[in-house]
Length: 265
Image (cartoon, rainbow, N blue to C red; front, side, top):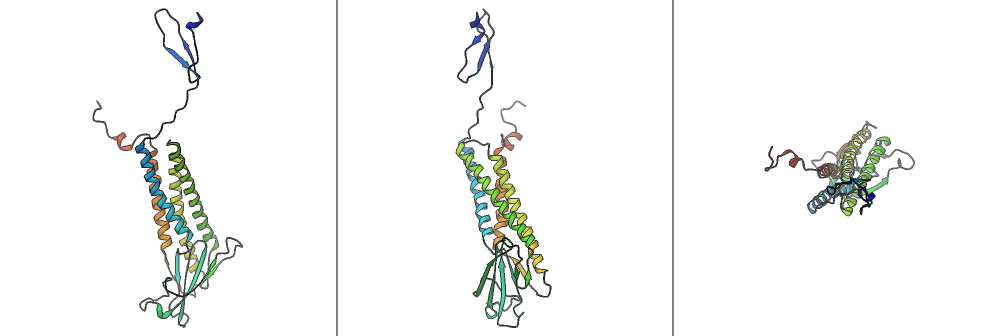
């Protein structure tokens, strides 16, 4: 009689209990902890993730290129400021500054200030000391604001760290074949894009603080190509993060909003 009530364990290790009766077999009620099953990604989903990850890698490459170079800003003196046949122009980034001595004859006659920095001349590059000894740097007789420069550098490093974490999440997603890590990856890429854009704003404030440190020395400034790389990278990373958010949704937004053709309602 006990055979009518006790059902042996199934393959998943769950117990079954059945109600006995002479009228036939009764439905089996399974009791226990269910086995978790992760849905595997389809081939189309895998291809979309790889395509968006390629877009994010473009942003990562531009960020590393911009952060590692010293062409964020170019500051220059007037051509005839010292009354000599030479003039000075400087360009710097997050980590070091370079001061170049150019011949006035090589500068465009229609140009009021010295430069551009790509002209041939003697160059002297030094790394900023506020990362080690905390000293401010002097660029063309003007003093940097180390707090703003340090803030811009820290934000850029945090952005690179967030990009690395997002890339690790996507690699794990592709290797495991599950979409669990898409949301953390999208958050990391969006955060990295926002941080790198904020780093540009803080760096620009540091440039303005440099120019106002010594009013007696007239200097002009213009942002250079490293800032263009970093700004483009921030936009690309935010776009890639938003696309990962769409891919992490259980249903496509357009499929959820548009009714099916065969639907009765």
